[in-house]
Length: 107
Image 1 (cartoon, rainbow, N blue to C red):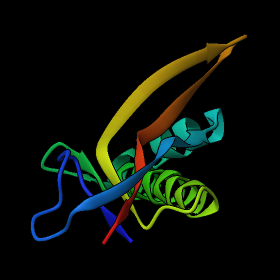
Image 2: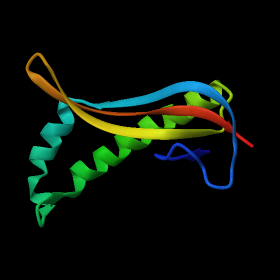
Image 3: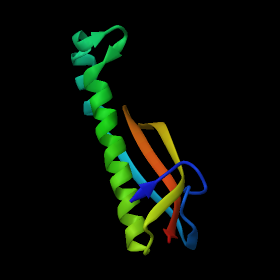
């Protein structure tokens, strides 16, 4: 499935709009504890463990986006937007990765 941040797909005509689709993934507080425990992984100001967790969350969110687009009958998603948000719940902090876009049918 084509997923793009643009509103068109070069070489393809959009023949139908199926609606807005979203995907979300939330990293719980244990990820942050693991991150702090794995601070020794930081090299050059980067943490491989934290980046891996974010990458996995982003992949989950994109998987949900694609599944919803297919459920609506789309074969592509245009105008994709990726957001990262901190959520405070009680004494814990979570990170939410959300993606949204418009499911379309390309010819």
